[in-house]
Image (cartoon, rainbow, N blue to C red; front, side, top):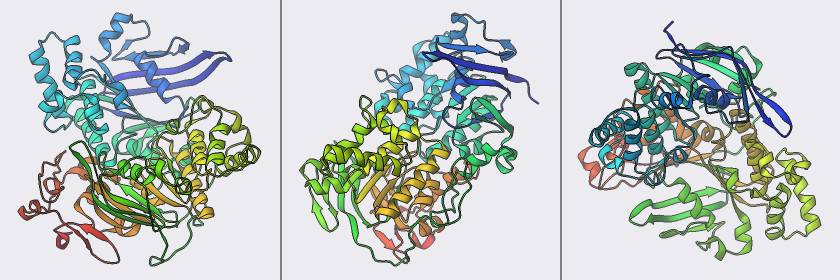
Amino acid sequence: MSPSVLNVEKLSIAYGGERGWQSAVNGVSLAIGQGEALGLVGESGSGKSSVAMAILRYLPGNARLAASALEFQGREIRGLSGEELRGLRGNRIAAVYQHPGAALSPAMTIGRQIGETIMRHRPVRHEEARWRSTELLRRVRVANPERVLDLYPHELSGGMQQRANIAIAIALDPALLVLDEPTTALDASVQSEVIAILDDLRRDHKTSILLISHDINLIRRSCDRVAVMQSGAVVESGSAEDVFENPAHAYTKALIASIPALNFTKRDGRLAETGTACPTQPVARQTGPGAERQTAIACKGISHSFGTQSVLHNVDLRIGQGETFGLIGESGSGKSTLARIVTGLQTPSQGSVELFGRTVAARAEKRAAGERRDVQMVFQSPDRTLNPRHQIGRIISRPLRRLAGLGRRDAKNRVADLLRSVRLADTTAEQKPRSLSGGQRQRAAIARAFAGAPKVVVLDEPTSALDVSVQATVLNLLNDLQRDRDTTYLFISHDLRVVRYMADRIGVLYRGRLVETGTSEQVFRGPNHPYTKLLLAASSDAAPSTALEAGYPTVSTSAGGCAFADRCPLAKPACREAEPASTDIGDGHLIACWRTDAL
């Protein structure tokens, strides 16, 4: 085995509070060799991040740490002074966190933030620091790095922000890189690029990696070994292949069973939830592929721009009543903008939205009360929906009174019914959001969305920040609610496994254009638009280099014609001359491509 870069033996952590000391980590031991990647996987509250904070010596003042050894490159780090720690962090040990925007200063350009790290630890002048910053951005596959150096974080997408964070972290070629949920909010193609970047670091610079995530597929694709944590302890460890292919511990088995496979849909059965077996009965209503349904949502010629930046281009979309329509695409493709237009939170530059055959006002406040009641939304973060100052009961009762027209007493009784429908205890009504887990808060947000008995619910990344077992619970719940109430879903996600499980039909957005539409079977079986092929490859279990080796540059520079032409391996000069129209290649499977003959 390679020399140990990190050695942790019998690490225990407890936090002090009003209720005394609460144990968070119990006797965790792990070691990482040079150039090795160790994955630390487990649900929220399992102690993963506490282990990372102990290694980085970032534990808060109310934490108590005990360990037989906490060594970096053979040196005990518990007794280091503040100055010694500052020399170590960013230089020999670096970290990348879950929320890229929060880790970057909004008041400084990307170039200044990377250069600051270099100049703090190396005796270099500003000009050399800028040159090194350019090379670092190029290393993390940023196109046109000279331009990006002069941009502020808010001018970059989430994926670009995370690449900038990785550039800062690897600026001084650290021996150990700690990544805490680095790809949770990123789409599949960007996630694959991040994995490929980490592989490059390990191969070219012998960087050791501690990757913390609840995303088992991410760990499987990028780590040599894995340790599974539950309630503060490591319950199973070994090579990633052995642990995930032949799990021995019941908790590991439950986590793996909670993950939807790319060929598993709601018509095949429910997802396994922690502590339960995976039943085989389907959870969706059985409708034939040609079944006629009333149109619940119709988007007609929707276009939208922010200033001079066009984000949606003449989008036509129809969703049937009781149907789940999955919308996929990279960050910045226009998915959330389209969702906000459907709900009336954003006004389109052109086009209209119809609900059940009737054109509705562009702004929600100008729609009739019944139209506002009929369309509700569930956001990625429940914190955007739940007022932290109010109890859950009050949060849910407000739409009951305003949208459903119930009196105070009837609304209170209905709150209890709604909480039970999302599998929350009646006592949850008396709690505030901060006292609930992330999964409980999201279920409360779903209860709030369903309070007015909506006919359409827009779900914008509703499970991306949740553990896989909690995700399974929420997805099963959404299917149960849809089956009971015949609700229509517009389901937005960057996780193609989740979309495959949930969606009846799927639309693929690229740079605001709907490049492919079809049933879930058609889209995942193919033939596909070249962009859809890229997304499917990035979500597969193949190594990230395989998924990306088609030669796709990171951005498109095409000024006319097909927007995907500069990234497309099938493109011919004619593809850059005019934008392709959608072609029906059979049974309503639409693809907007000039090269349908070669798909």
